[in-house]
Image (tube, rainbow, N blue to C red; front, side, top):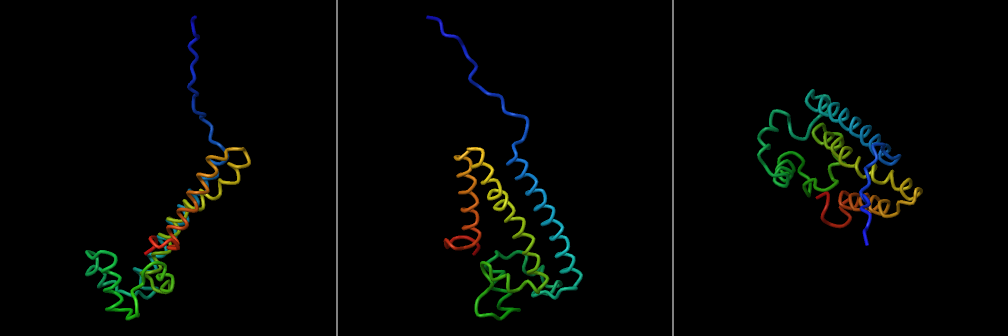
Length: 155
């Protein structure tokens, strides 16, 4: 008996889905917003318009330090708080130019979470439950990791 040779491969579509377009558009807007924010906050810092925790002339002394040592050193030398600003404690220092620069980094880091969460409803609506669950799980895992709720992230 002779079997017909059927080509079971499917060619990928060259047309982006609505979810792909939504993801890409949100990513582009979030990236542009984060980049513009980074330029603005950096200009506020280096211009001296916003006071800094670490004086601009002294920041080079700290560049070679690992993050935890840097935070301990600036706490000891400038902040004199009970604990160094770890995790999300930098939010209390947004009035300082050097810590304001963390905000665009957090925005850029969080854009992916927003993109993953935004496409979930469309994926479920069109019946793509497996990908919808993966996108939802990705958004939740990234959110939990960034939040520090589960103990390992954001510290």
